[in-house]
Amino acid sequence: MFTGIDSRSPTPLYAQIADRIRVAVASGELTPGEGLPSVRALATRLRVNPATVVQAYRDLERDGIVEMRQGAGSFVGDVPAEARARERTAAARRFVRQMLTEAARLGLAPADLRVALDRELPESK
Image 1 (spheres, rainbow, N blue to C red):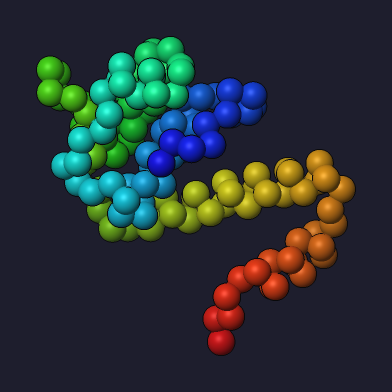
Image 2: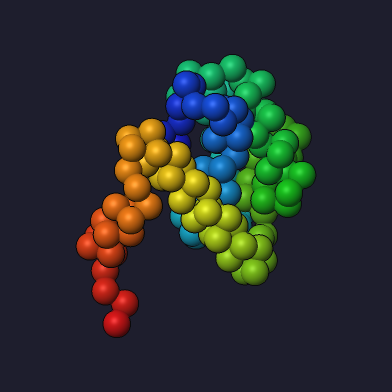
């Protein structure tokens, strides 16, 4: 779930962590009531400051995705289906923006991307 956290990215680390958890909740990878790694354990695993993880968890708590229980840890909240669907759409848009940024860096034209996507996406017919 936390692969691809990049300290060189212009996106702050706490936002990258929060985004990964949002996507995991939206996709059903994380289910309501499921415990998240402790702040210390996740900070150690990702080699970031614990305050970075705290900020990510607080943002998620503010958005109703995570419940933080003093002394017990952090847990996935009961996120309604429509909120999970909105998050999946938002995650797809973030992914497309990242892809477009990388494509521009590589000098790829939008037409090149369309051809590649058409070839790679499974047929929906």
